[in-house]
Image (cartoon, rainbow, N blue to C red):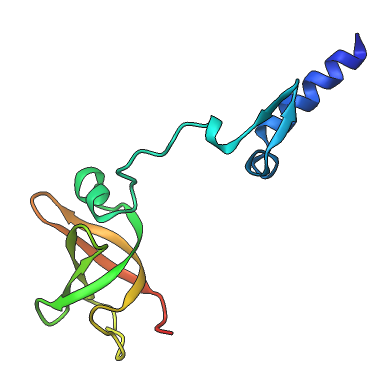
Length: 128
């Protein structure tokens, strides 16, 4: 009986371990595959579309995308390839080498999201 409880406990431990699950685990004659887990929703939170639909003022977001045009002195349009929003560099130095249509990672905070989504830039990945 003790062997069965130990096997069940080991199986539960293996099931909850992401590293084991991602590489595939063997548990009571069944191989657990990454495909056995629910798929992510198509509208992930860290896409422009996800932020526009689900973002709230004060939320932080990491986005991958490109700046496509300068709108005002410190406001730029940013797109992830599907949708676009505005990024404000107010109170932050705009990188001297900021380049349009160059891929960046943008760490930001939603400063307004009623009819218009605007992100406040906090950090921009370096240009390589």
